[in-house]
Image (cartoon, rainbow, N blue to C red; front, side, top):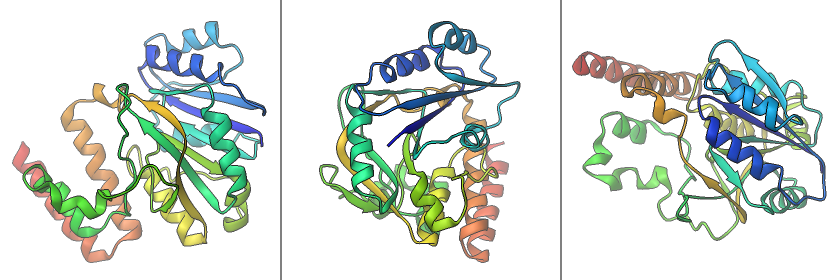
Length: 278
């Protein structure tokens, strides 16, 4: 039941240090390897990892390659039965890894699984989503939920019970556990790589969509929990650039998984909005 943990980090030295400190205090009955992929943070993160966590396998990029490509760098090195993609601004509890790995081993039908995520104030983060559909993504693009929140209730699965294990469409990529053996069985591929056409956003949704296409399943379980400081890296990105990343990823997702007319309409709307915001 060995585990590889991959953390892609960008300019969150303090959060990364807290994350790694918590990881290495985990009480587990299995072995695990931690990989940190630094996306050119230039904030002392690399030096901190080298000094304080010599057991970490550190990969240092000279530019920010994005989430998918950076994860793939480490995924190509793993040799474990399970791999956990973990955001740098996360903090596991002492029993998080043991509980979630035990659950995953007992539920091999779950190619991907995720645990309960809570804020620093212990409030449950509503992370479960249905697969993006044209209507809800158009509403989000036009910012309609800011005025009428209920328009995306179905997409956000607003009635989801976070106290019960359930099969779901997709989960946040912040704590994303992949059963490598299950992936190999359904895909015939040795490595569960992310689609590098996404720089950030939609890559975990894309992976979940691929899992279902191949006959696998994605599951949420409340058997363990992890603290999520939600977007510490991304808060440093300017709003205009963040919107650009989001729109590009949405369009790439619909180009791959949606109907041609859906992609074309979203492309036109995003293009018009860019002109408007200028």
